Every structure is written in C-alpha cells, then in structure tokens.
View (cartoon, rainbow, N blue to C red):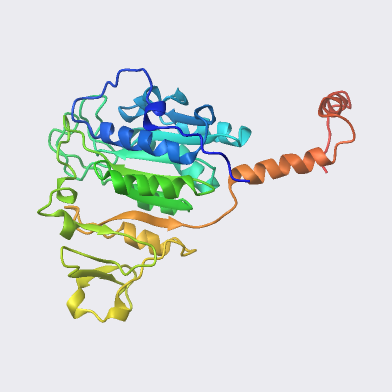
Length: 343
C-alpha cells in the first residue's frame, strides 16, 4: 500500500537559525527551492540528512530542519558514503561548492560518483572562493583577476559536468539558482534516482563575482544562450527555436546550426538514458567561454547497481553462512589462531 502523505510543508523544513549569507546571494534562492521541494519526498524529517564541507554553501545544514552535519573541507562525500551505506532508510544529500568539491575534495568527489553511492550531491558553482573573500577557484575562467591572481589566473578551469561524466556518474544535471521551477524539476529527478546524483547549480556571488551567469538569466540574452534539455525532445533553442544541436558526420563532438538550414532528421533528439557517457560528455562541452550554448537539465540518467546495494549484499551473503551469532563467530575467529582464511 502507498505511504500515507505526511502533509509536511515548506515551513516544516525551515530551521530556527538566522540565515547568514550576504544579502542577495544566490544561496537564498537555492535554499528556498530546496525547502519547498522537500515535502514532495514524503519522508519524515528525521530520515533526511544534509552533509556539507566548508564554504559559503556549506552553511546549508544549519538552515534545514532535518538532521545534518557541517563536516570538514572536501570530505562531505566520504562522510555521506558511510552514512548512506550503514543507514539505507535515510535520504542523504551533500551540499558543496566549486572550491570545496573540486579542489581539496576532488578525489572524494570522483570516487563517490565512480562507486555510485546512493546520495544526491548539490554543487553550488559561483566560480570564486566566497567564504575566504574572493580568490579564484577551480572553475574560474582562464585569466580571472582576483586577490590571489592580480595579473590573471593561469589555470584552466574544471568543467564540473565533464568531470562527473568522466567518473561515470549515473545521474548528471545542471540548473540555475534563480530558475526555481527548473531547479525543482532537476531535484525531483535526482531524488527518484537510485545511486549518485550530481547536480551543478550556477549560483551568483554578488560580492566577489557578481553577474557571472547574467547572460543565462537576462531576458535579452537567455533564449539564445540557454539550451533546455528535455528527454525525448529535439534539441532546439532560441526565441523562435532558430538554433539546433546536431552531430555532424565524421565529427566527434556536437555543433550548433540554424534550424531552418538543417533537415529535421539531423537535429539531435535528447536521450538522457544513453548507456555510454560520451554523448552526455559532448553536451557538456558545448558552451563557449562566454556561456553561449549552455545546456541545462538532465544530461545523463542511467541505471547501475548502487554501491550501497552491492556492499549490503556482500554482508547479507556472509551472514547467511554463519553457524552461530555474529558475536560467537567473531569470538571464535579471534581465538582461533594467528591467521585465518575467508572462503
């Protein structure tokens, strides 16, 4: 029988803590969208956990009236992995930023995605270090002038989605902080996914990197810059759908062409369920340096056994072979000699 609705509301997920982000920060919009979305899960608050690392975004658990942990720099995926495996009854969410996840935490991020641990990762990408007052981050553009790079950054930036897809993540998506409807649609799809769900959220830092994503938001430019991916639909965009995405014969990547000059059967139809990540990877490489041709939506959503299910299956298999209680078996093992073998 279906679960009885809990009748939770946005108010139930607001904590009593004062929200302490800079006025105008994009984090406020993301927080409001997540709090409003949470009742849809129909999960008691005590079975929902938000785990963060270090950074502006990592204050998130304080503001959610659920369980949570403000953990250590870059290690939120590792902590969340242990919790997800040991507590399959919990809905585990990781909140991180481009610095926290892609610098000190880069190793932990790629392995949690590779393993396909059953948790959801929200990466707030503002392309700057906000908490430490404006140094360049792993996603800052080449030549970025900041306090730590006064003559411009010499680093080539990470593309977070390409990185996730390179780790064979089973769910990869991108959305915007101020597009509440789209953000919540992506959250909904991620929540339904069994395994690691990675969501990059373009988030404005109005103090240290204001307007970084304005071309994707301003009415004058957004239609020609944004590509909204819809599973099963042709990839066309523009105010009059005058642009389309194609896979040119003999080419490895994807290109943007004029719809009127392209045969209908040449226009790419988006399929997030393509088993091989190469297609989603090609989509992730479409944006120009000025953000023109930026896809948002679900890039990839494929089924693969989660790490949690595989590990718990191993434990259950081992327990089925026990002749006594786990305590008796352990005591016998410890007292049996200096060495032992596992069948």
